[in-house]
Amino acid sequence: MFVDSHCHLDRVDLAPYEGDFERMLDANRAAGVDHMLCVAIDLESYPQMLALVSPHEDISVSVGVHPCDRDRRSPTVGELIELAQHPHNVAIGETGLDYFRAEGDLEWQRERFRTHIRAAVASGKPLIIHTREAREDTIAILREEGAEQAGGVMHCFTETWEMAQAAMEMGFYISFSGIVTFKNAEALRDVARRIPLERLLIETDSPYLAPVPFRGKPNEPKHVARVAEKIAELRDLPVDELAALSGENFYRLFRRTG
Image (cartoon, rainbow, N blue to C red; front, side, top):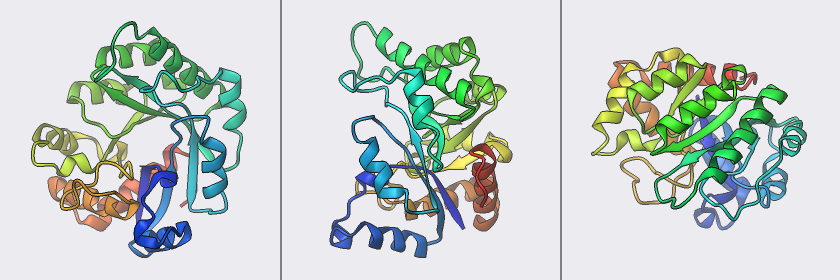
């Protein structure tokens, strides 16, 4: 019923499942999660992540290096293109810009971002974009690098309607996480009311950002239902209709069959 368009399954807390990854997956499937996209954040842990999830047909993967950590090894365009050829790989990322806690010269972030965009354009894979307090530079670099040729998703969106519009003009989708359920997120809920339904995705970003009423606890893909419920409420839609629409959008963007 639900597609979790962005999670980090290799980092989900397995303590409730006595350390058993397969039990965790089965519990999330039983809760109605039909497909999960396990998103990479670095190259060092990517082989282990891929080995963990690749036996499962209901899990897709991406490859990329998160913008926050300068110490993580940055990939080359060729390296990303090669890694993206794996049959379970559907995207490049997550990548982007994050100026929230960054200091000093951030040209390294912008160059890492450009590398990912170039790999996505060359490989024909969509981008998974992380952006925080870097609206102007994010949109400018996407335009400069021709990111509309790849398309993709603005994941865990927390920005303005104007930024959402600029991204959608380049063919991007907008994905909402558990943040949309937070008490102080009324501005974000207004954006969620306005996004065209054909451009809307839902996600958990597990194990982070658990939605209300689980806020502050470890997150899992099954909690994507809470995100769907909140957006369905905002859009005056049945939850199953919102789930179906967001799932169709996911499969269309990432060229998977549901």
